[in-house]
Length: 431
Image 1 (tube, one colour):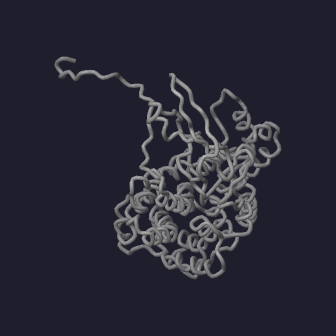
Image 2 (image 1 turned 120 degrees about the horizontal axis):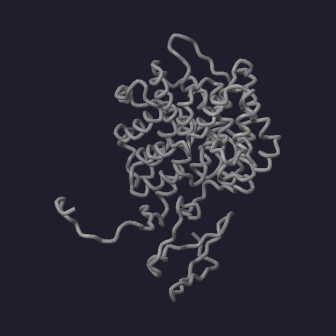
Image 3 (image 1 turned 60 degrees about the vertical axis):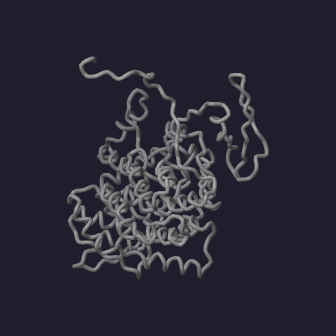
């Protein structure tokens, strides 16, 4: 971090504390309050940490007012249109787009690690057959540290590198195995002659008794879904990974913690919630009823998949995802699928109705990714696991950055205590 060019004075209780102010490459200035407790005997209060920078990072930047998402300075819409997932993985991990030979070498390293240890197959059998794939993934990814002892020493740069490649390579395999296990089908081994997204699709949908050919339109859409979910700055799951990593935990445990956080419906479950809402609406003729509910300020109902907490004008990922959604729906057809018919009509209304336009309730990336995954044939229980395998590279990039940050300390948030004052214990007969 560069030296502070300016500062702010905080005055209270006859105390005066100078707080350094740092200016980032882009974005609002940051007040350095690290000495606030030592010099002022006070904490700051910021539930959800929405006004607190907990780290310094050079990976991803979001400007919600402008609808801008940058990975290492590159706009996400440019990457989504012209790049592919593994190239974005390289960018997030190493800071620059790869040259041709670097890309070839990186893809080869990932491809050669797609298989999981054969004994992990037995680990899956310990779960109930109807286990949610996310529950399975939390357990299996955490257990990777029991299978790959040679890449858990976080002080060794080479072991960190090996762990990163293993996680990026094996998460699609583990997610596909969790899906296959949940539907009672045999595991499908990875095929290293396929690209990353195609390989994942064949592991999910191929069966040993039939030939399966990956449709390139579906593979392109899956690659975009992965790319558009690769990293999203200091969100809840990324912050969880960083917090777990701050204790010195191994990378597999940290990623398992991120997956557990992502499982929450307020975070990674948004596209699943969107599909469930579309199915609740059921048919196009019922849309006006739900539109009226959404407009009624006294009705708790709200449309899922519209607007975004961070992006105030539009979600830059949604435009590209809409293109893929249109391609997939044209390929798969929506005429015999009431859910997808509802989705298309809701999209039309949200983009033209004055109420939605004025409140900037545009279809977001969760809306489009949900209908794409549904059209592909994925059950809603697989939406969040796909999000998790896509986000793994972002978690790893953030974790690697944190581990090498000389200013990093173990996370220890403070609190505004509102409990009882000190009191003496009384035995049960005296209470």
